[in-house]
Amino acid sequence: MLTMPRVFLIHGWDGRPDNHWFPYLSLELKANGFEVNAPQMPNAGEPKVKEWLSFLKDYVGKPDNDTYFIGHSLGCITVARYLESLSGTPSAFGISPSKEVERKKEKSKVGGCVFVAGFSGRINVPEIKEFYELPFDAEKAKTHCDKFVMIFSDNDRYVPMEKSLEMARELGAKTILERGKGHFTAKDGVSALPVAFTALLRISED
Image (cartoon, rainbow, N blue to C red; front, side, top):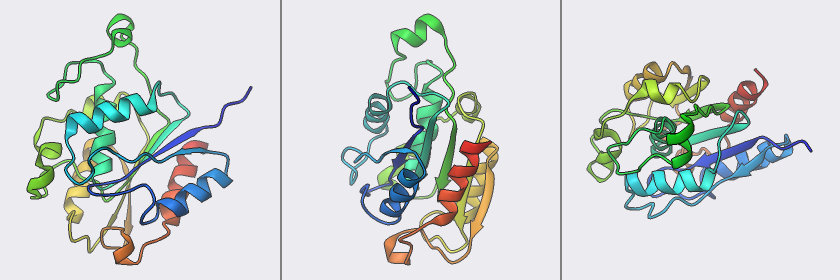
């Protein structure tokens, strides 16, 4: 029996899976044969790296080539750190590798990631500083995904364009500039994001 490719939509700080452009994207993806998963991340208003990563690992289960991720803002570095954690090495977050990973040393690989307003370096937001201040090994993340797209805006008030480009360089991501989209939120007038949908489709068809 054929299985549907899975897409996980990971929201940002103080976010929800039903705001901004996530509902639009969910409908478009479902209409094109994807299984869409848009979880509510725990304690989104006061996020913690260990909690978010543990939740995501349990929620995703076993990743494979038909597993894709679309992240917004804090969701991007969360997904990147999740990929890093798949190497099975003990991390700075106290998340131990699974017994299966320790035993087999397998390199799970996902189909691809689309990041919107992503960052991995310092953005001077104290409330989420552990997400970007703790060590991050982009090379380990890339062993579990080799298709990244970074979408960013030239007037993002939270994530400077250079920080998105910095993360894109670390991951070898294709970059897409969207002018005047701010932080890609409903307040910025962004309730649909066709560029993210198209990027995911192209990754899945490569």
